[in-house]
Image 1 (cartoon, helix red, strand yellow):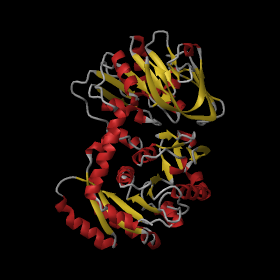
Image 2 (cartoon, helix red, strand yellow; image 1 turned 90 degrees about the vertical axis):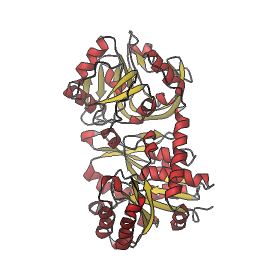
Image 3 (cartoon, one colour; image 1 turned 60 degrees about the vertical axis):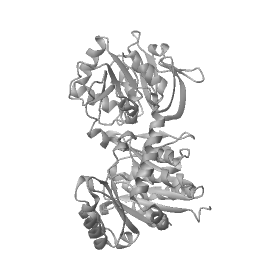
Image 4 (cartoon, helix red, strand yellow; image 1 turned 180 degrees about the vertical axis):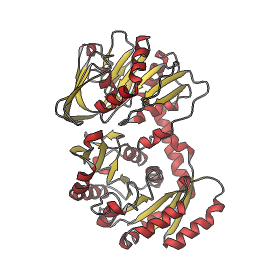
Length: 488
């Protein structure tokens, strides 16, 4: 199929977190199972949860999951503009996988029109290799205050001539008003691009909302394309952004191991926690900086940050660093991943002002290492051995860490190079590798070292099973054939 004959359909939402990402992932798997060549596409994403592409770029983690659902390699063209908030300095603007600029909100609004050519170029690139491109919007389609220069929702749909399906979330309430209200406030030419609507996350008897679907259809003249029941298994898939951290998993009865994870303002790549959350014998506790470290903690896990120095300051301002230092003195285990690794060191220097003002910050001093931030970002998939077990993962960081504790590396990469650092006690360690715990052998050995045991499941196989289940769920509740006829 040529680029000109490939079809595309865009899914926009009445607001953030209405389930756009998961619906696109489920549809990508469903249409892939039908034999179509599917590509996911999101013109603009804002998230500190990112994934590394094979060609050394980065895209939003949600698009990585959608690509996995479509069973295709990750491409920088699947998410040509990625905004990564980094505190007072604004957001890092990543264009087609590479750092393009840093801009605050107002400056970015003026920058957006210049990014549209990159967006359209990437879209055409995907159309050239696909039968169907599933496009995901960002935030809310009704943000008319941001419509000028828009590249994420209706601005893209109009420029690329892509029809739109609007998604509303009934679980948060007011779904009739949010869908009908969107029709009322957006430009009539934008509204004309919307071909139908989906009501997502329904709970209960669907016959009770039949009149609601009719009301929306009558008020908007949009086709009702499906009422999708809540899909509980979606909780086992990687979340798109930090909104997921607002509702942490409930305590696990009988969990033997307790892992404490400080939730800092600029936390990133927190899907590192998903394989641990999936372990029935492990309770991952999200701890805010002002809270105290539970006495029965077995491991403190400091994970990634998009603004390491600012998050270190937040950790200290809340007082949680005192608990972590005391925990380490008592012989507790502490592991830092990426930004967390840098925080465990003696100093973090930012001579170029990458994260804001040029400064040197004192770390927790649990590792004898010093980190220097720089403008060059390392984006690479890696594999190796750590804790005596193989792992696969990726690096995504700006900076270099050196010091005497690197002589005791956390592990070794496949080419033999040492990676990370370990304190003389062996109980404090740091690494730049993300995705470690998705490696079943590494996760099993790590939990055993803490006195626990892994359940023995294959984490990646579980993700595949959930994607298959999501595809079947959507096939049962959406008009898949009609959606295909709407694509253009």
